[in-house]
Image (tube, rainbow over all chains, first blue to last red; front, side, top):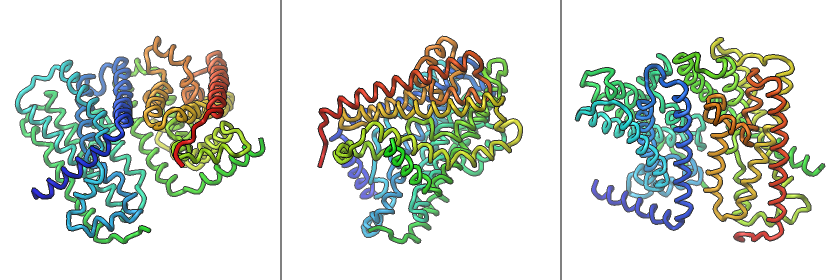
Amino acid sequence: MRGALGLYFRYISINVKSMMQYKVSFLLTTIGQFLVSFNVFLGIYFLFSRFSSVKGFTYSEVLLCFSIMLMEFSLAECYARGFDAFSGMVRKGEFDRIMVRPRNEILQVLGSKFELTRMGRMLQAIVMFIYGISVSSINWTPGKAITVVLMIISGTVLFTGIFLIYASLCFFTLEGLEFMNVLTDGAREYGKYPVGIYGKRMLQFCTFIVPYALVQYYPLLYLTGRVSNPLYIFIPLPAILFIVPCYALWRYGVRHYKSSGS
Amino acid sequence: MNKYLSFFRLRFIMGLQYRAAALAGIVTQFIWGFMEILVFRAFYTANKAAFPMTFTAMTSYIWLQQAFLAFFMAWFMEEEIFDAIINGNIAYELCRPIGIYEMWFSRSVSNRLSRAVLRCSPILIVAVYLPRAYRLSAPKGWLEFVMFIVTMLLGLLVTVAFCMLIYILSFFTISPQGLRILFLSCSEFFSGGVIPLPFFPDRIRAVMELQPFASMQNVPLRIYSGDITGDQMIKAVLMQIFWLCVLIGVGKQICRSVEKKIAVQGG
């Protein structure tokens, strides 16, 4: 286990070093990431300057919701980016090389890419989070702080799981499937509002099928004081279980992998 | 002229080949459109009076936007052109007895057209048969429909002319990445890609409507459902023509000066 971690950090440091060779490009891409999510923020700002609240959620509450979702997403994207580029790895037959090495495949795929540029998005999320907290009227208690931490951890795991599905499907299709974007980019894009505003059906889907609501809507209800049951603190935790079927799919894919490279 | 038409035809047929990708794209855009409608529905129920358009105009706006995404999204740019500039293949294109601006222009237009042709009809058909609250309604009248088609084509040309500026400016920087993101995120925001222009406060909107970005998707999508009518419509069309001429003029001018002192990268 310690060897694996050491190897992983070694991969990361190589990735970061190689990225730092192109400093200007790195800086510009990071700024670009910032700008793209800044657009989304401006959209929210102007909508709320017109409507003031949506289904009872105020501007500051939506900002909190959006910033936490964005943090989860950019953390997952930062280190699980290797899954995103996985279709290329399968197509070029690079996965064969990975399989002959005496190390875990996931570790190597994760190590193949580390996107530090996603920090642009992360920065945006942190700024919004601080701003959201300062204008909101939430009474912070230790329980609520723990809720936020659990939301971020579980959400990151959840998004990692979705990236893992995306990669696993490449074993069968060779090509990345565009509609998987709905679950990743779509969730980031529409997760800026609490899932509850999309209606009951969407809430059910996001609770039982892909548990976004567990890391977003329900804990937010607790944070904003709409419910006071302390059990809500731990509601993000079950979302971590989502990774289990994703991992099973990955194992299945690895077992059925046929080399396609040239 | 003929040679640019054949470039156009070639690209168009090529674009029609990727049907599986188109299918996946259609499903994605459909879900995207649906989510977008749910968002605006939530805002609509929150405060009907503050909603700047009728809700049917809003749903039509969203479905048409999704169906003709390939027309107006500036970020559908061609990697091949950027690659040619970076790796030096541009030298071959410069050898040909054709204008590089015209060639890339016709190529981009046909790429976007073929993409939209493959993708629009399934989205439009499904959107027409949705339950009343979510459906794409008929255009307001014949005049609006004709003007919708005309302004949509103008909007497509303005979008392409804007993208041409990005291609040409990347001759000056070795890594076009940063320039590209900056231009694209501006155009997405100011053209009404994040939220439609009527949702902005009046003062800001007045400034935005003068920009070239407002001549892209904003005009046709709002004419269709009667959100822009009468004098406003005529003014919007004139703005489109004005910006099209300016963008093409500026683009060609820069292109000519670039061609004179181009340094080919790589080998």
